Length: 123
Image (cartoon, rainbow, N blue to C red; front, top):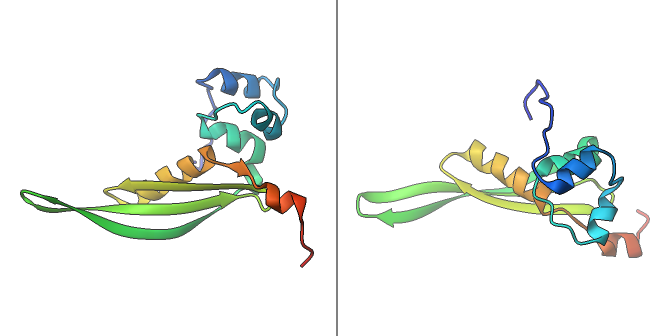
């Protein structure tokens, strides 16, 4: 997000329910298998605890009549170190745009990693 936080205006019905505090946790959304279409829903529940890491940025090329068109593919993992994990992949002409898009897609694909919760290890 930008340094100046903008007010979130929900677009989907699920977003409105989350903003009105009718849905209290991310687990309620997972329980009913509701699709998350807004990344702000994840920010609302996990906001400060989310950490993202760029796994890889690789150039990909497409051959055109005029030559080669180079774009950048970004792989981003996101999680809160408490069982929520997501992976996003985005391709764009610019690296920064690809990373931003991959972060949004990673938030939308966040799932509960049950194996972490069922057999926790003490390190």
